[in-house]
Image 1: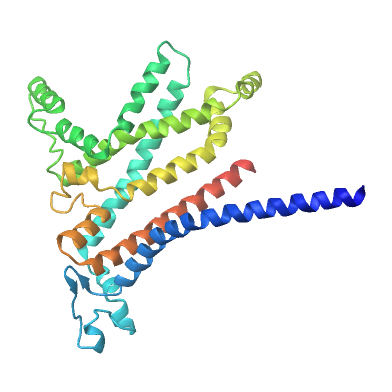
Image 2 (image 1 turned 60 degrees about the horizontal axis):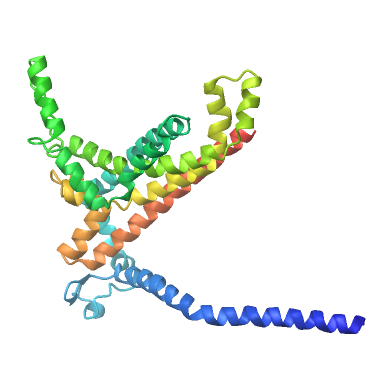
Length: 326
């Protein structure tokens, strides 16, 4: 009897192992295709970042023997030519500053407003479900559609805000005119507002879901102990929502690093290069000017910038989490 049970158990273990192996065999083609589609472009772009690869083929970059292939050689000055060029590229520096401005200011605005809206929508009131659906509508639009909406809204001739400016000018007896899309500062503000208008619902949705997962018993116990609204928010809501907060801020930060559609539609990177982002500069470098090697090098610089941002942010949130736990 014992031997029979042992044999049955061994057969079951063998069958499970055989089943797992079959699953792996069927999954291997899909995994191989996904790896090829992700790893090959990554390695290819890394390789051409060390070349002077341009539209129509490679070009000679020096008198070395590798000029025919366009590869920049193994010497330090040659292999890092595209990367060294970035140190003196003022347009690149401007695009990097613009991108960091979009990321930092945009994430702060979206989180603060999204958190406030989540607090409001978490309270019971008539028509709350309808209001929630309305708040989610901008997120359902494509970025290009949102950009065209913002472009019409910030038009200085025929738009609601332009009419409001004229009415205020007439009322106050002084000229009020904000050049939303023709001044560098105001164009940056306009882009941040358009992006925030579209993606604040994303922040609101996830933060609201986190708030609704908090048991009402915790709040009741805090009120019994004499905690006021601010103390409850600071000591209960914020700490419990910290994992969701880290997630939404990280997701939106990484997404804003790649911002391009809103900028192309509203300002085209102007005036000058005042609103040009790194992604837009990479796009122009590769597809407008045909310099794929330099564009690939900038792409990897952007990757390094994103990794630094994510690392610093996660390190800071871990410290905050440890301090709140202590």
